Length: 281
Image 1 (cartoon, rainbow, N blue to C red):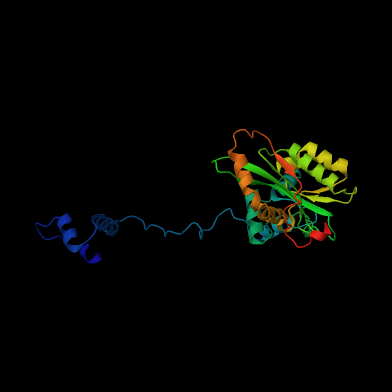
Image 2 (image 1 turned 30 degrees about the horizontal axis):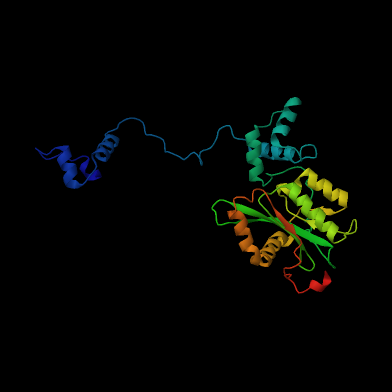
């Protein structure tokens, strides 16, 4: 292209025809011709903003002074904005807040400047049962019926030591009153001594209701609302396996129009335990 800048076009050949034959862009050709015919002062070299020097930038001595102020005993635990206003109250201006942040990032001083307590790992809560009726765990599962959208609530209480189903209830409702009735009858049936039983549960609505918590306090039962090692999942899985022969009963209750809000409740004494420790009960 530079060879054609000072050469005149052949007669009868337009600029468009010449650029099409030479496969040149007309705008690029015109820009190159304008630069070649320019007779004014030479344009300065273009530099990127990142490498261009800032005329108002701090000198190395000033940066060292700002970093010394940020790390002294008076301001070492304060954020830059607090240091900035503290210096202004004394009539001292070193730099802006953004410059302080920039200098701190460059010196790897960014982050929390206050004294922090070291992390202390907490032990995972676990339940240990050495004999029957020492730790119970219970939950509520939904059993589907043959009618779409209708479910039955299965209340299951299991002994953690023997994996024995100590009580269960099948109902159309899920509330704290039924849960309180189930726990109270199971507590009375097995003659649990006060301050001996620990009851594990999740944080569902029936487990956190005031009437249910008042019952636990009245019976001197220790309630634990954590989920250590997936105990709740194991409880529901084992309970459903044990209650598999009664699934037809749940289906019939779901299909019966006259069942209403009636519920079934009885101790699971006729269903074999999941574990082979029935003699412990």
